[in-house]
Length: 281
Ligand code: PAF
Image 1: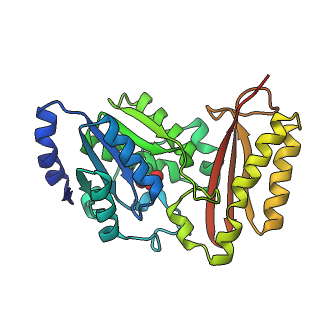
Image 2: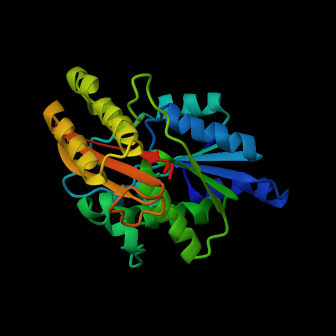
């Protein structure tokens, strides 16, 4: 595996691949890799000739009171995991390499569903994601880019961005990878104390119970309220518990396929999860 830290180095490494018209798969990450990320790399490996992974903790997608400074940076360990998982090129630029030294005057705002759910409580977050992902897409110019469905709304925002700006690549969404107890894998799980870690799987347990309750005919509003009550009792501070269509439109009743979304804090750690609920008619 090659590691590149500059845009020029990355271009030089990718040149032979582009000239040979081989397929480039791209997995953007912020590092501190876990099985969820490695699964994206393996999916990319199946479909593409060359797999590029970026590790970049993007300052502009963090709010002023969020965890940018503390976000775990574990490049040496990550490099080893990526080499083992079949990554060909690791791109790990500095903030200066990514954003230059002059002020950035261009912004990218995805409207509509980007203002909802996480977009409502993390002002500017998806603008920051849209900017960095667009820059990374321009640098790597992949044929396919792979994203995890734990960040379901992020995938929807990036799909919209790609469609609206005619970015010539295909987005592949990969299902959530969970720990044995059901907790969706996330780099932020590492912030949890032992006690919090033992409580955290109740998000998924509640989503599963809600799925069952909906399919058995319980009213959507009651099901969402039950999740909230249970999570508050377990020690969470709720950000949102919501239902949407798979395209993220509003849902008032369970009368079509529905996505359930939870964002909740345990102490200072914000966790998100989601579950698809099939409408059986
Ligand atoms: O999902 C992430 O890790 C980040 O939001 C991404 C897509 C790498 C952009 O910084």
